[in-house]
Amino acid sequence: MQKDFKSDYAVSVHDLCKSFILSHGRPGTLKGLFMLLNKSGSEKVEALRNVRFNVAKGETLAITGKNGSGKSTLLGVLARVYKPTSGSISINGRLSTLLDLGAGFHPDLTGVENIYLNGAILGLSRRELKRCLDDIVDFAELHQFIDAPIRTYSNGMMMRLGFSIAIQTDPDIMLVDEVLAVGDEAFQQKCYAKVKEIQQKGKTIIFVSHDLEAVRRVATRAIWMEHGRIRMDGDVGNVLDAYISAYGSPGELSNAG
Image 1 (cartoon, rainbow, N blue to C red):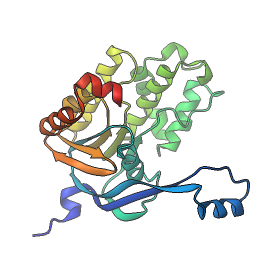
Image 2: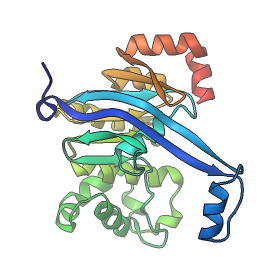
Image 3: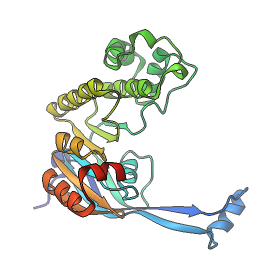
């Protein structure tokens, strides 16, 4: 019996492929680009190859793998940053992406002004942002700096602010790329507590991480990517044990990325 996507899945991925053309030259014109693509100076890289999986509503799926395995590309396709070369994806619900915290910040605007700017980029209305402004500032712990220009912030401060804005979107599905370890240890615990709260609300989370302890702590299921394909998909403990067996100790994996 075929499952009804709308009732069972938040995300469905079917035979997904994504290729990139890498050129080893610098064409100065559009004509030069077309000429270069037809020469041996360019190569086709298959980042994703026939990837297929479903994510149930309320599930927390971790995607792990070494650098170049295709995990971040997969998240980028789900976030519609990249267009699939072939195959299809289906998203059922409001989507929020935490892929590059603070990417929409303007350095000359204050923290408050950037909350409105970044929040608008994430789809929040000015009224919504005004209502949750104090919550954003409180969570980010940036009260004394919130009226200072963003260019005076450290990277950690910008990431904290970006995370605090993003979690206000109240999405059905969250895509998270290596941003759970934001700030110091105390702030990280706040982030994990917030993720737990989101899970308890029945939201769906898909996140990419090299941190195997974070995967064990947060995920209800794991996918191991290798060379653009899914090598293993299933129980978190089983997937990570197989991954460690293939590549080494957890410490070595963290360093290897």
